[in-house]
Length: 333
Image 1 (spheres, helix red, strand yellow):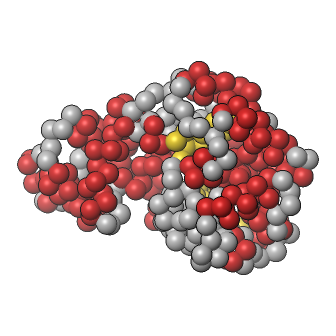
Image 2 (cartoon, rainbow, N blue to C red; image 1 turned 180 degrees about the vertical axis):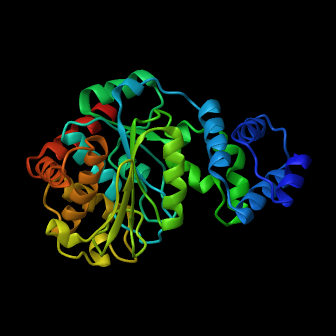
Image 3 (cartoon, rainbow, N blue to C red; image 1 turned 30 degrees about the vertical axis):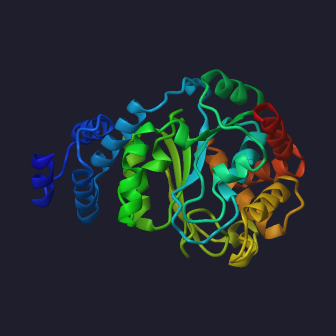
């Protein structure tokens, strides 16, 4: 580690193999907390490279719990977090809309870090039990088109740096890893990012991983399509900025997308349920339709986005999305 730190201080970069080795060595207890702290700070100050990030990803997947379900070719819909917007669970809602429309979805997530309710909070809040059992994961995908992978059950390496990250109280490269360490290794991913710099990083990451992707960012700072203003989408074959009016959506107000400053996990669950039950406020329903539609287009890249919007809308309004969620909850409670 002394040699690695010296190289980083001199502005050198590490190879993908080197950061893979570092991650594995961390899980073996080969470095002190002080050395790991110095490593994370040095990488954060210089800015991590794509190969360095991918090496850490390789290490996390290699040392974690593996899942054998790649043949389902699912999509994951996820946000980086950190936008401090405290929205309801838009990505998780969108997952069930996409699954209700007949596509396989493998959602990877965790408890809330910077908002009231994370994906794990809303899933667990319905009495659903997390599992890493491969047979149960496969059964869920087969019978409901959906599975939820609670990150803490899979990424074993994260516990070795958890205390250090908490003590540092600043973002590190590990904040970028959450969206790309889904143990099922999905064939497709729609990722929401909190800024355009992150969009550029993940574009290069996805190109090297070799999956179908869409990266979305609302230009007023949301790590999802918020419909509060223009939003940018970058995918395998196009990059474009859209306006809500392009799809006949009214502008959403920030307050429409959260339960207010004192909202609770219970409030977030109520909004989540109401969207899937087609009883929510129109702005809440529209934002989920928009995100689900671009997820569908990530899979069906040749399909016009207007058709994808219609598919997502029908999944909610026909009751398929809610039926899919209920079936998933019954199977996994």
